Length: 405
Length: 100
Image 1 (cartoon, rainbow over the protein chains, first blue to last red):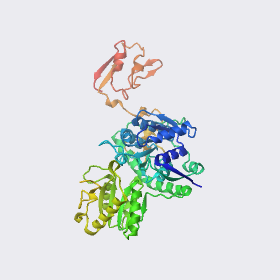
Image 2 (cartoon, rainbow over the protein chains, first blue to last red; image 1 turned 30 degrees about the horizontal axis):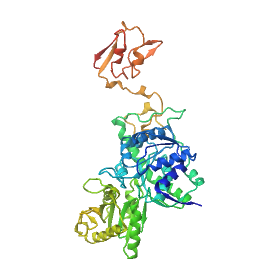
Image 3 (cartoon, rainbow over the protein chains, first blue to last red; image 1 turned 180 degrees about the horizontal axis):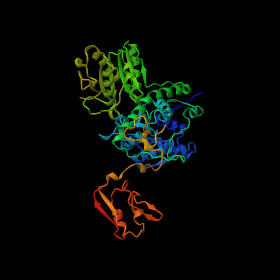
């Protein structure tokens, strides 16, 4: 029987860390992920984990130590947020190109500035092209479940890439919700042990990592890296299938919520999806065919699958909790719009930037987005007059939600 | 199936290179000519050399081979032309010449 508990998102991921009990954790505290190394340190002090905790002096060092530990052959994890992830910047690319399967718990928080510590996806979205896998959670349960699946995906021989397990700062990381934990007897055999084929501490093989690669070799290495990212899609699905057997909870590349017959769809990432589901339930009662596509896996980006899932929608609002200052919208908008174009989608699509720096998104906001989507479906994006909620503005594919103007 | 470093070259396909360009064998630097960066070259005057071997540990690139207790000619496949050996030699037996 699963264990019913009440936990914050951070407690949930820390509990998963305890159950996986990796070999090494170099980490540096930063709000709102500070609790992760703190809880792990407590577990270690209480004798409940035997992970080697390395209290480093910065996130740059945390990621550097993580690369060293992972290359040495140790199952390695770390945790960070916002500016901490930004300080890792140089080294996260090294981790990915060195193909070390580190798991990093990312608690999403805005990158300053203006100076702010609240929920936004700008930190991990900024790292979207670093070659890491990225999986996002709607709530504490998913953050826990995703962490348990992380090593199976990252360490798979067809993948061998580091992975970010993301959850929304404060909204998920600090809010206490019900959760079902899985017993150790089931978790441990599911996660298994890490036995890398090659590792630095192997006394029977000399090995070097991070050698200088001249122009004649780098492109080939990056192509292999890109192929590993493609391979990850099937591995993520296979691992999810096995995970369903021990948990009863099913995961895909994304979740479709009342999407099958939906005329109007919202595509979003993270905790806002819970809010969107409430709005969709209300609208469905009124006969509005509203649906949600909740992005779980952002890297690799499941473009074809998303286009297929959205093929019957008349209008789509792609939601970004992140600016990209491209003058066109946010990162999810850019990638999904491109996918819809390649998939020859006939749907009208807008990209809505919302929830920046912890700005709330409410059920009523989502209802208004669906009202705008109906208007867009009827008149076309260019001829829409509404825009009281999705301002900046009517007629535009690039809008802001809940902006004062 | 794994290629040896000596068999990897600019014609090797991406599928055949090691994951992450890892190296799975020792002493592979012998395979590579890194001396091509050099702009100045040390020249040894055997007449002045007393075989004190002081230059050997100073060389940052292990480019001074020693055999039977005596140093030989420079390994110009790995010498970068830094000139540290010139300063290390107590007998003025090493000078730098311009070019490779």
